Image (cartoon, rainbow, N blue to C red; front, side, top):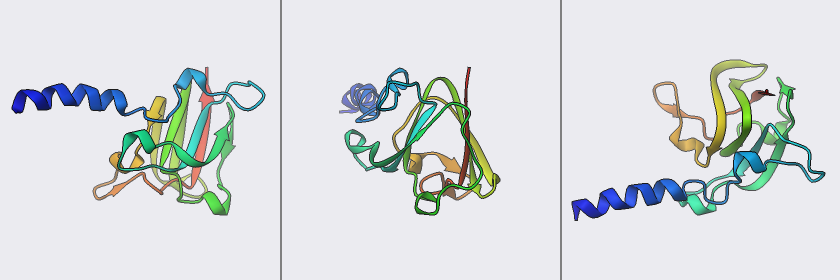
Length: 131
């Protein structure tokens, strides 16, 4: 049975992208490159992550005060190829900070913030840059 668990781990890792788009595929409705896409929802099931309402983040976008309905609501995110998203836990760009490089984070509940917290529903400010 133990050998089976080693086979499942790579499978679970491959499913981690779930519904999350690939970083290279991040584009807005007009086909313009995005720096990141932020999602309101995630799930215990990876194939149900990166869902719900979204914020499309353009390269160079600097948001020290996220709009109230999005404050502390982001649960998953994808950062585009050759991009970096910096987030803060408080406005304006204060509190804990974290940098996300290119890739998907389907469950921010798995990303530690400080000793006891996570980044799930903890983002209040952000800045995104691409090269």
